[in-house]
Amino acid sequence: MLFFLLTVIGISLSGVMMPGPVFAATISKSFNSKFAGSFVAIGHGIVEFPLMFLIYFGLYNFFQNQFVRIFLGIAGGIVLIYLGKDIFHLKSAAKASFQENPTSRATLAGAVTSLLNPYFVLWWVTVGTTLIIKSASFGLIGFFLFGVVHWLCDFFWYSTVSFVAHHSGKIWGEKAQLLLIGVSSLLLISFGVWFIVSSLRWIA
Image 1 (spheres, rainbow, N blue to C red):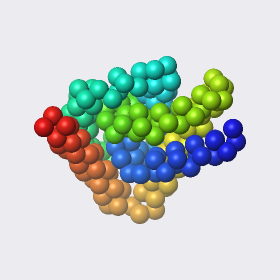
Image 2 (image 1 turned 120 degrees about the vertical axis):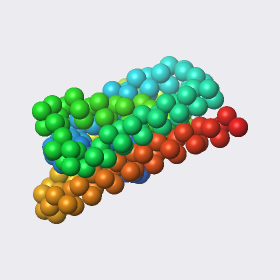
Image 3 (image 1 turned 30 degrees about the vertical axis):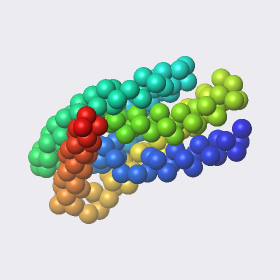
């Protein structure tokens, strides 16, 4: 069991540390709150835990369905482009009303960028499913520990990213802060375009 959980930590961190929509959303929300990443991880978990249970209880084939993957790709791409465009207004982004309600805004960002990311689902029906099957060999407690350990890796990473980004923004100044927000915006838009193009290739 211990060796398996150490494997889960290694695989989970290697996946979560790759730049993606959730990472970009974390950066964009971090300048107004050093705890933004924690809330993003909670939103990510709100989507992730039900998906784990669905796969565990046998809905693997549903997420393998080509229509489902195409729908997620196109819908996710449109939403990511919208989110990227929304934070592209750098001055307003830097002074966003995120401070008024950091919990709901960052949690929503984590949930949306996870739910509408077809490659997030693809990871779970491939690598994630393999880990779930292995966890099931230890019974329900093995599956539970797997889910908690995996999510804690997400929580640790995104919390660290937002903490560093928040304090780095103060050190570098407003121009560097605006630049990073702009980069995050372009990343979201780029991922959105990529998701749509990839989905259209599946249709072809």
